[in-house]
Image 1 (cartoon, rainbow, N blue to C red):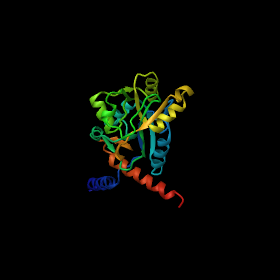
Image 2: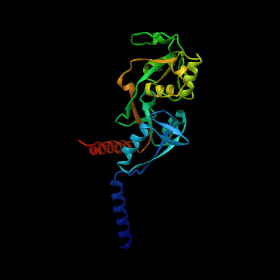
Image 3: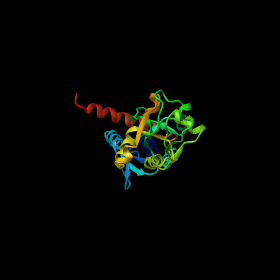
Image 4: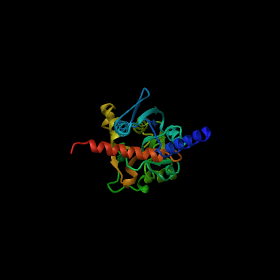
Amino acid sequence: MRRVLILTLFLVSFTTRAKQPNQLHLLRVAVGDFYPYVTCKDGEAKGINVYLVEKAFKAVNVQLEYTCMPWSRVYKSLYRNRQDISFPYLKSSERRNQLYYLKTPLMVTRLVFFHLETMTMPNHEISLKDISDLKLGGVLGYEYGQLIKQYDQKFGLYRSASSQDGFNRLLKDRIDILVEEQNVGEAIIASLPMSQREAITFTPFTETREDTNNYIVTGANNPNKARIDELYEKGLRLLNEQKPQ
């Protein structure tokens, strides 16, 4: 009789725990450097996105533990489930096979072509034909939307280890155009000597809204992906409720 009672209590306890939602109190976050949205200095993550994401998860009692690494390693660590989340990420068909995008966009970015003032760019919407004879540069691990994807597949994008390296290539005429997010590029240019700052300008190019939305991501096979999404949405709702009317 005692054994039957113990077994019954165990089954009731197990069933109760099974019905409870998956509890998450700590998420491992992998990020690279994407100033001013995310900065990694001495292993510490800061920036606009870091502040916003931390506030949302803190509202639902979830702590974030950051690891700084190159973006190419960030990507691998996510789809291999060695890290739980990262941000900010643009959507792409290739990434959808290995990453899960949380529902609500984190922010909207604006990709532009940075180039020297001496270069003349077309004053119409830029097509693949307009840039087919030019050397375009980017950063390892970055995604730039459909136009640059087509260029990369056909001609090859010259990728640097960082945005700073990309601007160095541009100033040394090793590339004709650096594809970069406008605020990121302007922040880097502001740190350059005046003569170099005055030598660089940018030209916008049109992309769809989906190409410019950035998201928090986790691995496509992460067993907690739905719960992470749910917690983030709840955190955002709580933050909105706290705003003064």
